Length: 190
Image (cartoon, rainbow, N blue to C red; front, side):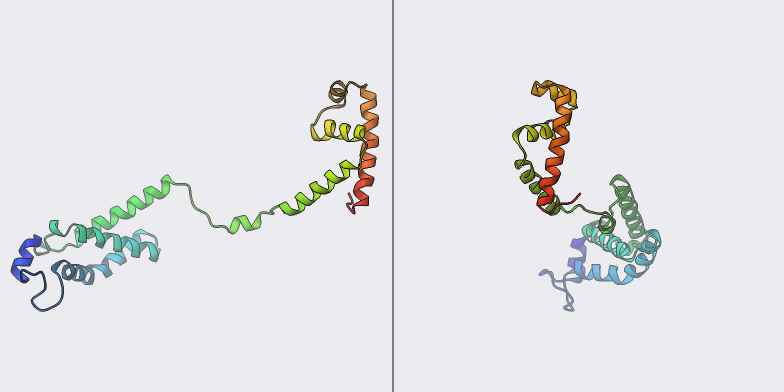
């Protein structure tokens, strides 16, 4: 049915219905909805494995596409249901293909099961250690920084500091003992 034919046959030139029901497109869409929405919903519900929300969305999108293509549709030529079913099936197929192209979405529930490190606790621990390092002698602090914080071996630290490797090992031993005492004074136990 062509839109201009409907207006000239059933509606006055001002676009209102002769019996006061509304514009022709609106009436046609109401008729399409009342006649086809229920059976279309049942068909689509089967295609989307019982997902009622998805089925409602597909039916709505199908009817929107019918509304957009009203000028191509001819309700007098027979039932529009085959066309609507084809459109709905294609929408479902496109949705399925689109879902396969994207990574699967998951909710936040699995994240709640993962233990999360408390950053505040870590920051407080680092501040305490930094304060305790400040209590060490410069030689002990320097050896802890080279071996533990920079990850150097005793030989590498000896080369970097220009002292024998035996001295590095000895200083590490006494620096760790002094650091442990400084941390215990602050209430930190190992």
